[in-house]
Length: 83
Image (cartoon, rainbow, N blue to C red; front, side, top):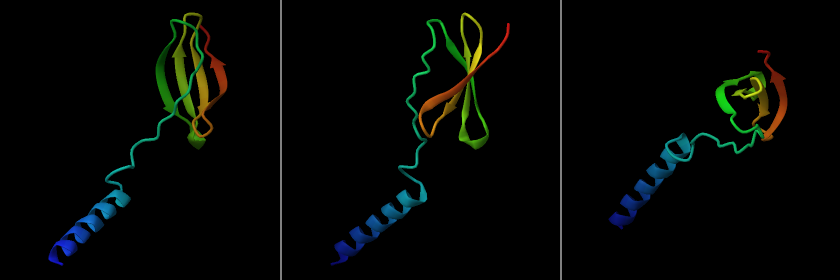
């Protein structure tokens, strides 16, 4: 009976820690292809208002800022930067 009380208490502590954020509360993952040409690289990422992301892409033909909606997992726009 004493062993069951100890095991039950340990189980309750583990569940409480997990719910508070000790485990399973890691960052969200976004799998998204930006479909940029060969030789492109991500030069920076910035968060915008409303949860959108701005991804600065350095391309051989000129830099771009690709606007991404992470909730829907899709590209919503692109801004061309002049050289």
